[in-house]
Image (cartoon, rainbow, N blue to C red; front, side):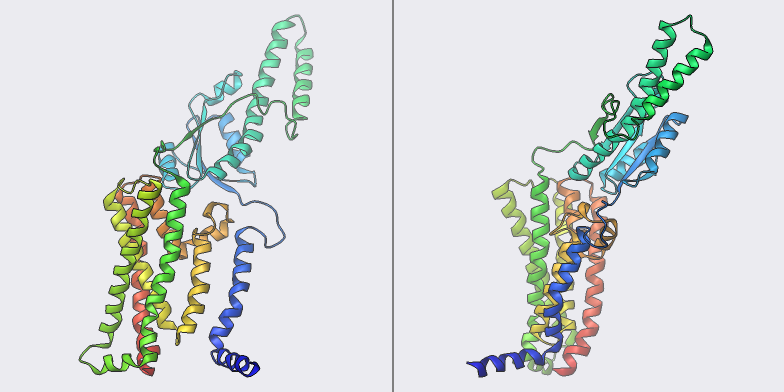
Length: 410
């Protein structure tokens, strides 16, 4: 019994690269999730929420409030014209756009309801909810204080016309000092005195289910990556069984062997994604017929990128055990940072930037564009082009590694 155990341990220790990857996997995942959930660095501060501000009023009041909002650590503000900003929110580049309409400053000075509106991305409900709380506790407090101060001073002036100007100014100053005491207080009595109109940037269709889109897209991409990696490792199996030598002795060019396996992998990838979406349509009611051309484009682009990735993993490994270790580590990391496991919007800003290196990110965002944002095929094609680019890069690397790592030792 102990001899068998020692024999297996010796076999494992011979493949040092696979052994190191086996030990490195949990360390890498612990580090990844710690960064993703903000557990690194000892800071509990949430990453700032990125929004646009469109100032159609351009008065001292609107400019002053925009400046104050820009100083908040919880917000990352960029000013753009309204229509441009709204289109960017629709595409998912930022959470929302806060609009100060013409007449905003006059409304605040006269104590009336201010002309402003928040257009937000429905697919980012958690962030938009947090954003509304931030605005209610800051923006609304600023506006409410201005309005109440104006109304109180106006009431004093009208109720006591016989008071001297110096006396009125003294009373106005005391009113302002009293209100300033509450400006930074959690019990600010004016923070709820004015409502903020909120509007989604697009009307959500009844058959559009955000959770369902996330589930099918995130899961489909992650499982597909494992499938294609297993298929890509088939060439290593042929090498170990000796059939690769027989193929190389036949009148077939070496690259033809690799490309043939790639084509088979792409076909299986397209079939797997198609089955997953048809299943989701039949069982869960996802409307996959919203935009057939865009869906077909994204399925082929995703399949191509994943197939290229699967062959890349097989080309850098020298044994099937190494393929298992490489694929588990890389796929889980890509799935975590790309949005298959953890929604992108709850990650720190640095993690959201890193996410763009993963296949998962571009594929999931592409399917979001189709099923949730209902964007035209021109916008969807941008995501698809990136996926085709990733797949092409992986294929180029695979061809070079195939010659170096596999053919040379076959």
